[in-house]
Length: 483
Image (cartoon, rainbow, N blue to C red; front, side):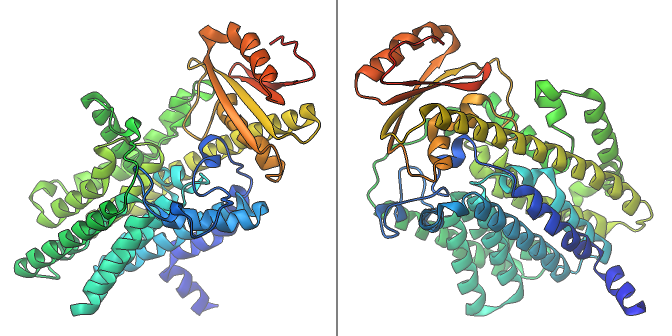
């Protein structure tokens, strides 16, 4: 009994995570797909595993996504439950790597455990861990941390080989993974594990990794199409992205109570803010001369290197995950530097409670959005009442209807342009789904458009309005449209 107590006392963070993991897996298994979940390569793919999708495709190159989608294509009943399991297990593996790296950097025991818990329960992880398409972000982080772990634990050619291999796999998981080509030597230099001469040498080697990736990337012919959503951003947009990135990484506030109008609750937002502030203030007050600390400044540089691919384009909720590992390492280092840690545990406990509450609230929202998508899809299937080959979805969008990322989506996005129908038909029908989007000002055109579609050979038109949580279906044997 005494030995068991010592083990729990020695590994409290790992015990807490291990006890939480079965419950987390059970809860996320209830999150159903919505909008983009049906369009990414991490949804069921039905073409050959050796198709051109393994090569660069326009603005991205993520072969692991496609291979995973092929697995789902062989057994569509695995979607999205397998996505959620693999993502949560990947996040857990990342958490164990954070703990291992903290131990390697010789942080104090309390610093290691707090960093581990911060990483695992942080709301910055939610965009990746609750989404069916969060696989790439999770595993770009995993292989990046593996690159750092390999760099810290090996020397000579073994170090360079592991660093190179893991960095390339990270970059092929998601493009921002290439940032790990330079982060490991900076971290090692920050903690005086390599001298300046070797640091500069390794930095040049890391940059050669990046050059190799780009040479390989652009040696394949691609169409050259670019998603302009990622580049058509203003200085104001970049500033907002930076604020969001820092807030999600460092403040576990219940953002749904702030952002999502139907559930806006100033009291909940204030309580989670107040609960999280003492821990952060303690970190700052006990490290007042942080700007003079070269190690800390280099860790901050690494944070922004990992953030740079997103700050230069855009930051969505999912992208907060890219920098979470450095947030945990920075927190661990600040705690490690403290001469007195009397208040660290109680203050971090409040911080952790705020994070867990935020996690739960956002998860409930994601479950409700998925259930809405399923409800609409089953309505459409019931109204269609027979297998069809060609269908069209008319979505009447209304930006005044509130939404909050993937945690709380509008009806048109929950219905996913009709793609949800195919999912709940076990991908049997329809074979072709086209899509028409109208804004609310043009809603009167829906009758004319629906009639034209039905007359042109479309067998069924599904109509969804952001203002109504229902589907109206029209078959080609009924050309009367009232919506």
